[in-house]
Image 1 (cartoon, helix red, strand yellow):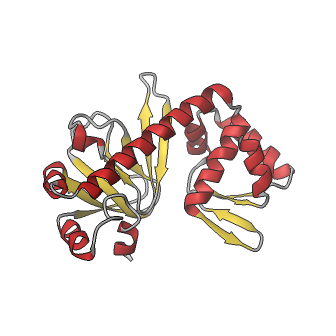
Image 2 (spheres, helix red, strand yellow; image 1 turned 45 degrees about the horizontal axis):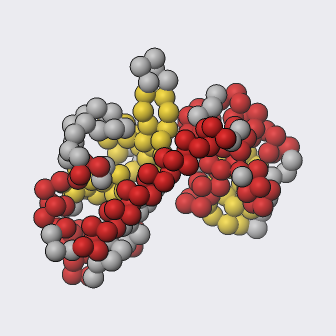
Length: 225
């Protein structure tokens, strides 16, 4: 199962079995309980991490204590890759949303492994390009999209990555509190709750503890535009 998850990540996608096993043997495992912090914004660090089980949130805190969630990551997704190109303070705090298992690779081991393997380096560049594209989309949404639109878009993104299709709709177990969901879309909890209640009253989704069931994907997609 772990190897199947790793194959989803950009480091492993293009590797043959021998190279994949060699890379896996260089990695160490870390486990966190829900709510535990892997590292804080500003900490020094030189490791890249891949989530193999569970979910984590990447967040930043302003000088006045306000929090902003940058991303929610799950199995097969990677973070900390900036340390490969720019070793320095961590740019975000990483906290386990659920009980989570990671594999990590040091800066030195990764550089050694990349030597002579351009497909892996290309995978890392694609990951960084994707991260930049997402940051640009988030900035544009904050300017051009209203809160309900941002909520719809965030739920659809979570559905793509964590959703499970059933007869009554797409079950999205995002494991986020209402406050965390609000931080993810850059709005107040009250405004996000109002948007969710409106979607529910229209029959587009059903609210459940730390999850939603999306019953009308098409209308949610239209609202997210």
